[in-house]
Image (tube, rainbow, N blue to C red):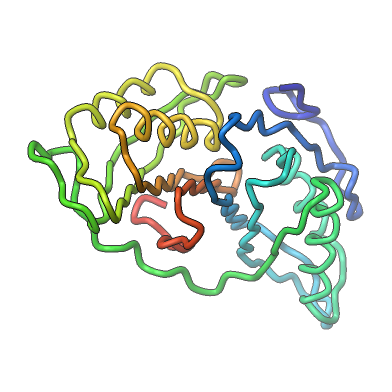
Length: 244
């Protein structure tokens, strides 16, 4: 993956809004892309602009990107792009969200959603996988705490809690914990990690139904939360995990 900004010392001027900061990167989707569903929730906690009274406003945004897009946005470029709004005046904030939706949609050639987040939902009740020894019954949300992977560009660690759900299958904790711990000294970008876990579980555990959802800690004021599922209907929403 080639990026204009990631892993590089960036000198930039943010005097005015500019969509030129945005950079697209290939998803490298697996061949099985047509057999699963999902999207990526991007939460941007540092979006600021000037309101009708010329006073600064600081908000959180939810940006939802479908996995059907060939490209996705590079995270550091998104941070720089959003930062360029700091001195832009909007009499109606919905115009700012619409502009962001337009710019990212044009970059990725897909429909995205951009909304202001006032309050995040609570995480679902779950069974902790880390200490489980017996198979966990179907129709239960499972949570793995302390997932660690390595960014392939910066070699910095990424941290997350990973959620699992299956309506049809029991989950054996021992091979799943082994799989998740194998990422601690290697890894990939958030989306690729979740897809790798998703397909490894389906193939190695012979699962007929599965949803995997990564809730990653933020970097640069942005967290990325990929969800991949065998079901078109998503059981997880954009909640806020305790570590986030």
